[in-house]
Length: 226
Image (spheres, rainbow, N blue to C red):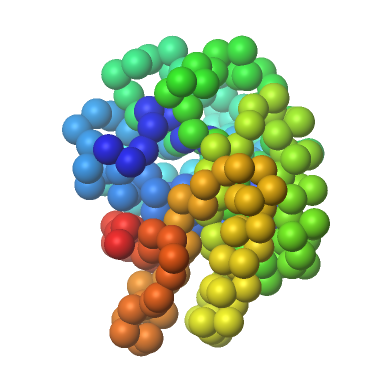
């Protein structure tokens, strides 16, 4: 088993946290028998959130806990108390889709005291094509600020460097370099390098020193680890 009972996914805005969170939950669904919950804690970014894919995820037997108040009749950002179930119930697997950077991570503060570090992974997603992740110093600074905001240490790095359908091998390699430098500086393993299924198929695979995680950006298939 290469996943923990609880996974917190963090990173800067636009790094691809939600895409990874959804694919990762589908990947775990293919391996696990336990109920899986994915909690959307992004109360800042109004554009792409895991709850927008709730119907598809729930058809795959993944429960979505959204960051809004459905009874209000409007899309008001709020963190559901149902998130507590991820930490309190030992019979489920939980994935937390965090808001971007340190400001977006503040919504997690309510739940910090419930975290059992022994059963929790904190994965930092980086996309070196985002200006805020484009250098080792920038990306490392964001990682450190997120750790301070949530009161937890990052346990793994996910290289999700891409330009959607314009991604090149150079993009992936640049992301791996930054991920490697952060790994060395912080003594944190690089868990995955992510590539889209389309890119993987068109390039007859990808040579990487890290495990490959195949992403489906249209959220129609299960992500695969190679």
